[in-house]
Length: 289
Image (tube, rainbow, N blue to C red; front, side, top):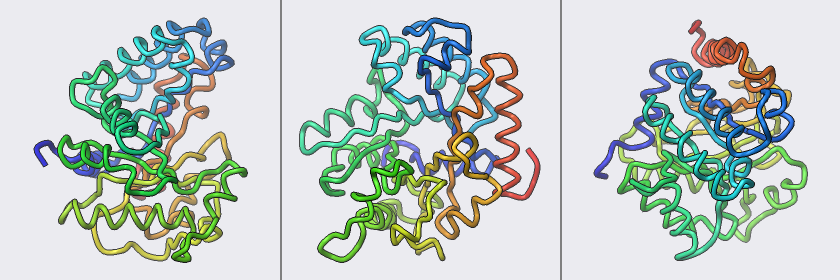
């Protein structure tokens, strides 16, 4: 690996007590609450304000790309400026793109979101591997060579997903459990003695993971598995219960919160971020921010 790994950069954030992932979701009603238009300029204003407030407080920011790309080229230009602000502030960026495909098509997605120098370069991206974990090779090459990260959807909180994610493969594993196990195995095989892996999973904090056959009893041998966990705050999961929810696989937890931070507009944004970051730190480390 020629670059510092994404896992190492995550480990540095965790060592500093930062586990909050600040979501940037500029959908119409929220933009109205912020007093800006439902257009690319409004989305950019929200994104750049969140980045400025999150720097030094959150571990990372996670723009939901769909809310930018709905504005076409202007939305992508706005997103580029949000990313540039985050890089300048030293914030990790997870592009929430949920891309999944095969062969050269997926490699092109990985080039878009992970290649150094790309206008839309992020530090990590969310991916879908229901065609098989091997289809992620285009992104995993970027993980190894360019120090990037991926978060694989494993168990998500929308009810419709359960039929697919709890379905059993020919080897007897549920689809969700196989994503978790394959991510563990990739990190163990490719990340050596790293404290934190660069391949993580998305697990909803509102779920009973045992229902997906995901074993949270203990951490397997190897680098800690990064877990990107939506569902805290507005969706009802309590950060105080993170240890119970994720157990032994929650050592490298990124607690994602969006609406609990964004509701209320720009006034008080920095204070809300600090409060949520402190709550996450206390829940995971037992010490105030």
